[in-house]
Image 1 (cartoon, helix red, strand yellow):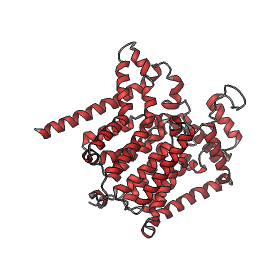
Image 2 (image 1 turned 45 degrees about the vertical axis):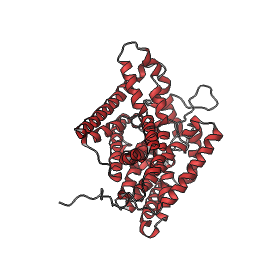
Image 3 (image 1 turned 135 degrees about the vertical axis):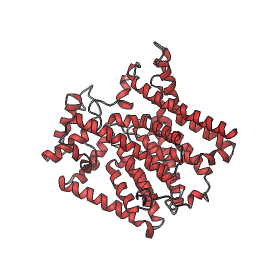
Length: 445
């Protein structure tokens, strides 16, 4: 009887989460009806007509078809005219601050090359579906690497929650290549767990199309390789060989771009107002201090974990810490589409929730509180969606943008749960010595 009651309670929770997921979709579709949403919609949820992909696509097309420099002033001016209807001038009052330059490493053109002869309207459709599939694949790769065992209903609920989340929905709306980077990082983690270290290094190199998102992950892998150089060095060879091919091939297309790229990256950080998420909530000096402390603490933790085998939960835990800190302390744009990097941390918490809950009363209270914070955007979306169903209900107006703002706290809640997991996860856990299955090899019949 108790087991039946527990199962029905679990199913009720899952159905409630599915309702929250549906409410998030409904809420996002009605966001333009909420007064005040227009000013924020392009930065937090909805894209402009051309999306974030357009400058990368147009620069790639001009380089590959017309041999023009995508970093050049002429190409930048044409992108701005397409975006804003005019060339931007910093000295002119009222001009947009985002200059929409081609600010990626040049080898991103190899990923966009198949689309350069298409009309951009077609490219948008193709890339929306591609990135949606990539987001689902990222989740599948992390599930396999972390070995999260869920029922079919729980698995469907997890996919629904992730794919309707504000970070993924925003990434799809903006056609953000960060979704592709997150998939490469997930693939690198899954390949390392399966023992395919050279492949892991290759995927890690591909993730450098957005260097600010991959730098801490690369640092963790380099540190991990140093923990057992003889057995793990093939990962570094895979990374170095792939990155060398990308750089030399793109240097052949546009000589000298490597020397010029750092200045383009610095300019991008200035005109987009890139800052760490900590700096949004804290004074500059305090934010830098806490960020420094966090990075030092993470470096010390990763140093202790560097000798752990790839099939140990501590390996993925250190990887998740690096990715969570990337979202929190690395200067980037504020909107939450980069929060897709929190996926491994979320799955680790699901995988080891029993250890958290059974540790002690403090762990249970802290875990419940932090999980509530993590779920808050979906819960608030349910409240707003319900209010939107009531004609002229004042609550919908007052709370219209609250789920968007609250979603910015997700990285802090996840980091708190990771710290709690470090505290409760036993080093002699059976999962730490049980090799993971090879998810990159087809099963023999």
